[in-house]
Image 1 (cartoon, rainbow, N blue to C red):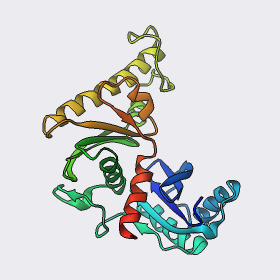
Image 2 (image 1 turned 180 degrees about the horizontal axis):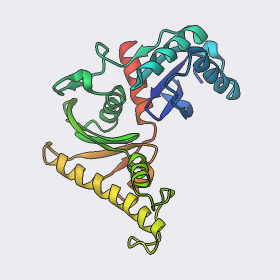
Image 3 (image 1 turned 60 degrees about the horizontal axis):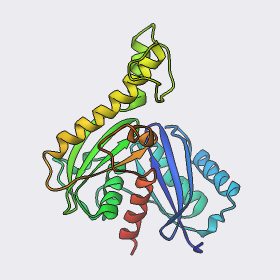
Image 4 (image 1 turned 90 degrees about the vertical axis):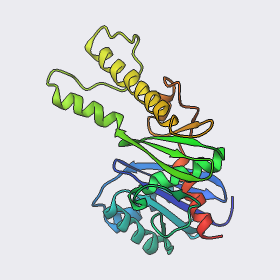
Length: 259
């Protein structure tokens, strides 16, 4: 292991995923709930507990990079990095080097996690691709072989969709997201699982097909996020699942800004 480590953090609406890189290798990975009003000290002690459990010397951390869609959490986490680990975190946002040409009408509207995903995906396949990120929302990011961020689509996340269904339909129970024995459900739980799993896989396949018609050349489809493996097993469109795509994108962005 290198004597210098990089801490990466992706703060999402539901979960925060953190990791430690030794050079280009992800050596530790943690997932916690995102608590919007978590204080600087709480962030610091949470991270310190991970370091202690995995026997990581905090003095080896020489850099930190953060992507966040939750501004209050971002500010507290950034302060924690400075106070507890004496590093000035690089925050993914306007003005940093990504290597992307963002063709959105307003580039500032593109979430930092989507930028990180795009950077990692292009580094991995070096060709036109679509990144599907299964988070609180499910995002589809379209990238050209020239390193252009073309835009994409945003759909309600799978868990949000299921929660809305249960909340708005009084007689429908909460069910685990999983593969039912039959697509034609023979009871309410099985019917809901079929609708959620196969319906969402069809949504992914349909959107990828539609988006691909507006892109040039052969398209690779990379999935990431908590439920990516579950949906990928039923999707015809997804080629690769990479749970650490966002973290790897953060690493690459940090290296491009600290050569």
